[in-house]
Image (cartoon, rainbow, N blue to C red):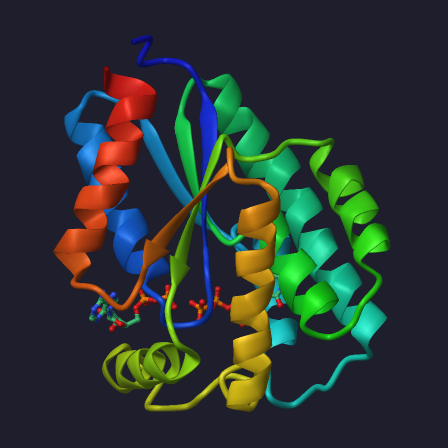
Length: 216
Ligand code: ADP
Ligand code: TYD
């Protein structure tokens, strides 16, 4: 296998499902196999994106639905042009924590947004760049939110919930359902994982899927 062939892999799921935990483990696994790996996330991976993230997650604002949609898309356009594409061109494996599917699910499916419009706008800001694989960590919202809360107690955010974590369980359940619907629509791209299992069990499944793609 060519270890200098760029590829994009995304990780999706509700808050607290374990995306950042699994991305870190996957990156370590791939680096050990000799790949150059870049870990990134949305929103907030570029200097402008960090400002956009601050606006989006601040409990001080409640943007209109379209305002919010355009902020996520603006962040993505900066991210694709300034980080993802250049790193793919350098031959890196780019692992991204949230990408186009989060917009489809959060701004579209869960909020009754215009799904066709979101699909077209996602295409516009990514130039049609889709991940080779998307790992969906599926878990009940109660579990994800409980994990996100205990993480916030230990990571310096002093237990403050951001604007999204304050939303009711029913919303997070819609988000969960939306991701499942997408995964069923694109079975060749998505790998569905049970996010309520042990960290190492999930990591083993992800590393096996990555091994099949890149190492064999
Ligand atoms: P996300 O990035 O999806 O919001 P994180 O990876 O930050 O989720 O995980 C949220 C919290 O739950 C962290 O404190 C993490 O250590 C913990 N965690 C992640 N995956 C698991 C798991 N499979 N079992 C138990 N705890 C987990
Ligand atoms: P993030 O820190 O990625 O969430 P977590 O680590 O808790 O999973 O916060 C990003 C928030 O933004 C999260 O609630 C999901 C939301 N989001 C959207 O609504 N649309 C999008 O397109 C993206 C990328 C994120």
